[in-house]
Amino acid sequence: MSVCLSRSLCRVLSRHTASSSFMLGEHHHAVLSPWFASVMTLKTSAPLRAEPKKKKKVSPMTEQLQRDRLKKRVKRLEKVPPELIPIEDLITPVTCMDETRERSAPNLSFEESERRALLLKEWCRFKQEQHMAEMQAVELALKAQTEALEELKLESEELYHAALKPDTHLFPFTHEGPVHTPPMNTYEAPDGKYNDITKVYTQ
Amino acid sequence: MAAPCRRMAGRSLLQFLSSFSRTSVNNSGFRQISSTSVCRRSWQAQHVEESASSPWTLMAAVCLQRLPVISAESSPIEQQFRDMMSQMEQEKSMLSDHELRLLDDADRIRRMQTGEYDSDEEDDRRDQEIVLAQDLEDSWDQKLKNFQPAPRVTAADGDPRSLQRRLADSLLLLVEQPVGGQKVWLLPQTQWQQGETLRETAERALTSLPAAAGFKAMFLGNTPCGVYKYKLPKAARTESSVGTKVFFFKAVLADAGPPAAPDSPLMWVTKSELQHHLKPAYMMKVERFLLGL
Image (cartoon, rainbow over all chains, first blue to last red; front, side, top):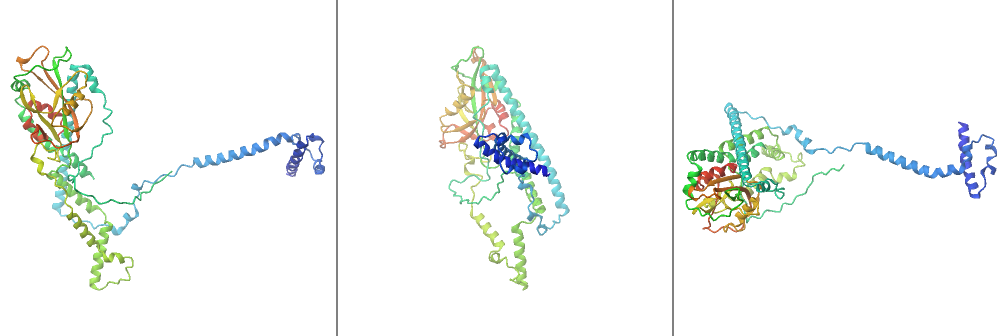
């Protein structure tokens, strides 16, 4: 322990002497400053005398070390997975958990519950018929189209190939869907001013 | 949420089924050639000869549709189901802020009337004392009554030339064109010329109509959606012209432009009215690709 301390002390002291010797251009073996009197009695190893080489490594070494340390810190920060953005639709708001908001359960008569059950079954049947009709209509339209293409092929090959080419100008296709009442030309809608308070999260 | 979506998809059922049943009855006895020979007695063979291999004349027609402007009427079962679903959903729901306020106001009024009301207890209701929730509801109802929406069933429903008729259905454009010496109501068609694709022919068919000036249509693809072919009567047949093939192309009306003159030979019809105007064999081919309009 004491040897290490002395060695480091030696190195520190020799650094100072080395700088002076480098400046003066003298060989370091010949330099014996008064500070070294007691310390020189200890063993000094060869690397200690190689002052100029060590000095060149010192400043780039520290900068390198600092850069490495910073990079390590940055890597450690990056390794942490980013905080997940909460999906607000899936979080039940606290106001909905309030018990005072519960509606009293309705008392349904037997006829009413029967009517509801029967209506549900009728609806099921109605939707199934509708679905089958839609599927059949689509199949029929598809059959009509394949027939048209076959006839066209019999007529002329180049027209057939021209018909098979996809239409690039078709998509994106937009159409305003049907509304409940037709639009009125003379109606002036009131100004719809609103403050958008949606929370925007960034990672 | 399920009920309104299904309502939008359910508009086609009644019309499709009605037209389906009607046309199947009508087309039982008609053969293709007999109907055409009646119509096309004096056929002028002045058409352009295309490639020598094929004896068929090619024509392209456009099936121009005006899509519905308003939502379809609900059938009785749809209405019943919708009412029942809204009732069930309300029963299963929780009380909203407005309803809570209504209940509190009613409670407070009741307590005020019985004399137990202590206004110091309710320090956060100063502003709500002045305007009751019931008053707010009444003012909202009043505002709704003051607003008159446009009627769904317009006066133009009976006029076949108006584009504002039958807003809940999609309309198809029919024109009266001379075919084989006779004037026939059909989808606008024109002959194919060398150097253009069939879709371009269909576009030309639309733009060349004198009454349809200013129609902006979006053609749905390069492929024909249907074909109708008819052979000329035996007397008019030659080696180079046996008959005609008409290819149909679907288009959606984007902009109508100025309204048509009352005597123009064009008509906007729904699918159920088609059979009154089209020839049966033609109708049979056309209604296949009109997806239960």
